[in-house]
Length: 415
Length: 81
Image (cartoon, rainbow over all chains, first blue to last red):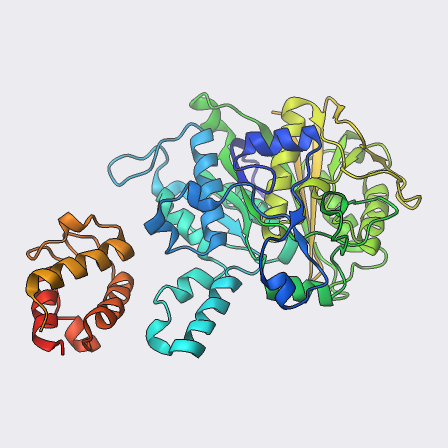
């Protein structure tokens, strides 16, 4: 690995708490919940046991013109919104063939997605069944493919150094950022727009997760359904949204006088090779991911003052991660679990949570874990509850783990 | 057979719905690709909607010959029932 320093100069997001980074961050600090009843007739039609989700606070079509929106799956729409925000936040203007702030050949994209556009696949299958091939959209394939979000962002920003779309379930967004980091460190790009996107709240995904018994059924009390580390937790809440960051060579960012939020100093990616949905009981993959990130950054575990936990609010997963954090780092970090407010954005989660980790370093404050009323005694960690906590942070880790045994830890340090 | 002015007007509605081109800009001499910036995917959508609206069949090898809006109007006028 080279010694090219990589910094974060732009942030963008659309989430269940708000249509941009500022409203999402304000919502987290204010302790607002993005979880609500799913307003769709199919909940009753299929008598689904899960009737809650964390849908977007702002419809993507409010920011994307109608004609462009109709060519994009919802997951592509949210990726485009987050990427454009991050791009503008970095101080860059719209890229055209006549004007570019970043040379297209030195600009990359790395935006992951868990499953791409299943809703497009299903609606077009309905068209085929009901009306025949004439009514199947010619945009079906580009709207359902999981590289669609990254590809559309690449076209929009004129990125020609390569477009990647890691698919590692709930770790996809974090792996997107780690991949972007590698693109810069290997010399392929100077700037990479990286993150993740997901928008798949639909009958089949809700039904599938419900059948795997991993989602909360606290239907009568949506705002209190996602409660990581709490004794009464009963599963995660499916959400939708996207996050994107602008990763930039530090020397380039400094030369143009860019605002630098934080430095991306290390990452760890491991795989459990154990079970398709369950964590390894000893947490070996999670521990190794965090340890690798710390080693790559040239730090020790004592330096890590904050962990933005993956913690989805499942009975088994939260306890496993808590033990892994203790083993890899210790019990000193200030821990928070943003899925308590955001729900689980699947492929978008790792990216949005990387952003909240970056903002915790940047602003010196860690949002509270919502709904944490009684800390599970097996969670022997300093989890922030009630009010946000001020903390001067030099280094923080954001964890993201996914079905398939994917483990990604991103380590950010103060600029 | 439908009047050519009516066909043009109906086609312009479809083009606006699919590709976002203002109806007033959809005039006979315009090329779908070069002037109206319509890609091959949108052309398929426009053709399917035109078939439904005007009761014509537009086979793929015919669609490839419809370069301008005027070509499409003439084809529909000649082939609609």
